[in-house]
Length: 165
Image (cartoon, rainbow, N blue to C red; front, side, top):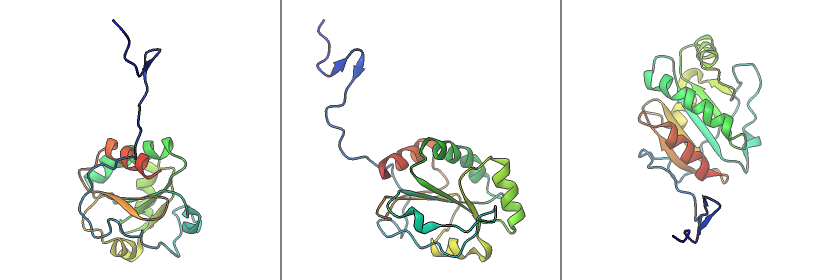
């Protein structure tokens, strides 16, 4: 039996990688539009959020809250994807009523990416968040390419982040 022409030492080499493919997105008015601006925010650890440092980098923005069970189910996956992709800017936006509740949730799940408390729901309004969790992935040009809703999986997150790179 002859080896497959693309098999090298047991490894299969892709002949044409082609463009990365995003998973199926939840419908959202921000798809294919610029990521909304995030200004004048402070992270839960008291540092100013430097969103302008994201310029030229893919960005993942995740909205969540402690009262949302699907949010709690997706936070560990988001943290694992963050750890695997340090070249991608991650931001968590907590919709709980207090910064203390936001901090407790971030600590409970060991989140290492910056998290801000959305006091007054300013950011959720700007992003038109109508369900949670909601995750936005923008490419390095700052254009929203994927929106994940309550049914998002870890594989969806991984695929969206990989496609945005």
